[in-house]
Image (cartoon, rainbow, N blue to C red):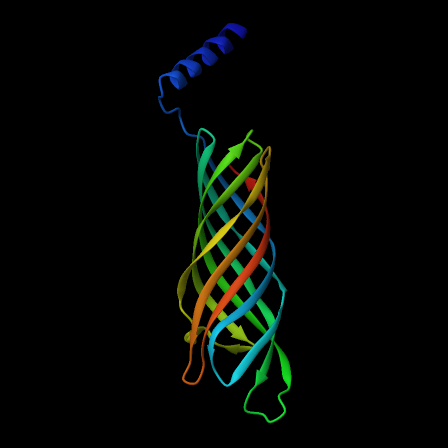
Length: 202
């Protein structure tokens, strides 16, 4: 057994020394978790003002694949996620403005494509773009997805840990969408701090 092991190690060393690419390990798994999410508003053209954003709890579940070459990897995912936030809405047309706390809720299909580096096959650092498709959007129970971009791009990045078949990730994500209605127009940025637990099936 020792001779076989030494032969395999010598073969791997020879391949590396000759700059040949070894067989790439492939991982396929499932994941889910929670997030702390909020909404921010910019370039507002409306009779309302949006102030004092507050976080709400979001949830997500999906699948991931990982292709690794040496210490580097690429990891595409498909994740169904709920997000949103609470914010104070003030009506500028009222003589004495009073604010009401309104909650935004989004259901999205997110497809992150992360590139990263694996340190000692345990710790990962990763970042990349995320394509986001809006499935539904509500403001205090009122459907508003018809006024929002159906799809957009954002960014995602963070760190992760692999322990046997388990994966644990902590990431930051930001996605901007435009809201356009007859009398209202603004850019809405949805930010999330995402905690995920995954399991490698392969």
